Amino acid sequence: LIVPSWHEFVELIRELYLKCKPISSGNVAEYIPQLARQDPNKWGVSICTVDGQRMSFGDATTPFCFQSVSKAFNYAILASDIGADAVHSFVGQEPSGRLFNEICLDVNNKPHNPMVNSGAIVVSSLLKKDWKMSDRFDYMLEEYKKLAGGEYIGFNNATFLSERDTADRNFALGHFMKECECFPNADQSIRDTLDFYFQLCSLETTCESLAVMAATLANGGVCPLTAEKCLANRPCRDVLSLMYSCGMYDYSGQFAFHVGLPAKSGVSGALIVVIPNLMGICLWSPPLDKMGNSVRGVEFCKKMITKFQFHNYDTL
Ligand code: GLN
Image (cartoon, rainbow, N blue to C red; front, side):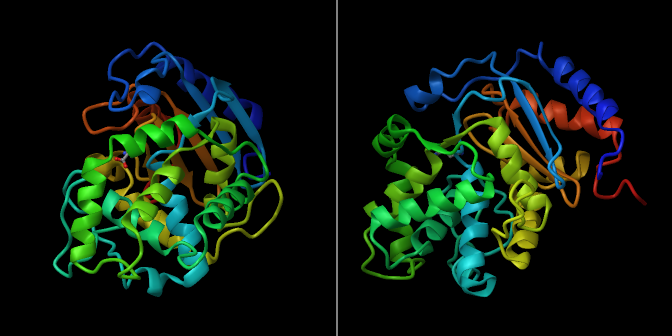
């Protein structure tokens, strides 16, 4: 077993979960009603190891939307499909140093990286780009389910409709990128591309399932529950590099410094953390800090690093 003293480990994680429970700072995202209505008291923690040992605390079976956490999986699926070099002829690898939804490109007129909206929208435009919209959606749903070992992946249509209704900035970004020739097909509809991007943000899951998906990343793309190879090796490595440098919005540098693990957060309060060759962690709590990361989620990670030597450079 990869974690031999499992019961001890479970008790230590339970302590961390309980320590973070009373935290009451932060605000739930309010730009769409479906997020504004999320209960700020919800707090779930799930862990899945690369050999399939699992634990969960709190609201681990309550559904929530992936939001920006989808950016990591979309990139890894695309790169497994068409190859990293093809993907990176359209999008860079550099932290943008700007807000996640800012209307800006890098010096080559490409999105800075796949973890900000510009890059994620271009990734969406590339995913099975010549297929019908319905088949593209089904394809991604199936890929997500594979990554989750067949566990719960759903779609929140109300979230999708609200996202599309409040999408002026993303539409502006789409048109700006079209002018800069960022998309693979000049005649591809921006509306379709953005619909697909919002649909992927509106996929929903639970802490339990998302921990399995994170564990698949920790396990080189092989799902620990099914032993199915879901992602190619290089995309798996690459997405972890991008999560390490760009996964936590404008807190990414500080998170890499303090916690030293690849992670990706979303505006729903979801946060995945990957400990390569060991485990995937999903933390979910809707109240966000000023950077847009889950307050309880970030605090849990900081506390975890003081208890366990999980930081990338702890072994030195
Ligand atoms: N769906 C929203 C957007 O694209 C927010 C994504 C996120 O989690 N930051 O603007």
